[in-house]
Image 1: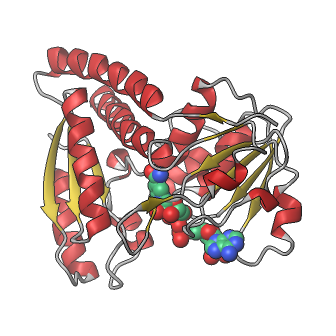
Image 2: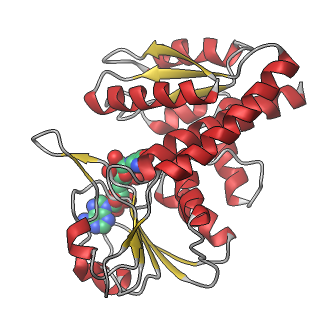
Length: 287
Ligand code: NAP
């Protein structure tokens, strides 16, 4: 097979940020203020790098970002002390608590504090419930939304296709599978206890890797002609960014794949702002 097509994230992200910019301008004219994102920041290299991307994407969308540091060892009480003012501030439309979280707090705890109408990360039980029910109004975790945007942009149809997702986290694997099911894909989730992973993954017309292990998926896991979506972001000891997929190994087998860097990552931060506009517009509509 010839070399695979590389599905770049930048054109997808640009299309999304252009549309967010338009919506943001209309929002500002109507409500005399810009949509505003509150980011609770974590002091780690990965989070700081994501924060840079958020601020740079924000610049293209006309939205506003404010940063509130979480501190190194927050208790559930101090977490509530940081998030509650954001919940109560009428000028904050969306709240994002960065990861990786310190050991003292969990995603569930955050999901129980964040105002469900400002939950642009899709972690509250309310938003997860809307997604599960197939509601078009759900605020979907940005990474899952990003993968769907990439498939749509490059016209990779998943209806009636077998999709295998390796990873079942609350913010990536699970919501993505539900979205794909909604488009009539036949979805299988795999995880760390899956037996004979490569036998299963080789069935996939679309294979998604959301594992967090550098270069884990190689040619042994990929069916000839498959589309491979690499969600992984890993940093090696030299500071190099690596995906979960060994791009060189699959290049002559897959039909198409997203690279790391430059694939899902930029689309995710664009989708974060698309979610912010969804949340801002919905809040203002409901008064
Ligand atoms: P996570 O919460 O750590 O989940 C990892 C998943 O991979 C789990 O479901 C785990 O299975 C599964 N897994 C681990 N080892 C495995 C193995 N040997 N075989 C099969 N499955 C295995 O991570 P996450 O938050 O979903 O993130 C996944 C990756 O995406 C990370 O690299 C993260 O940095 C990256 N990420 C990227 C973006 C982006 O914008 N591109 C956004 C978010 C995250 P169990 O459930 O059994 O433990």
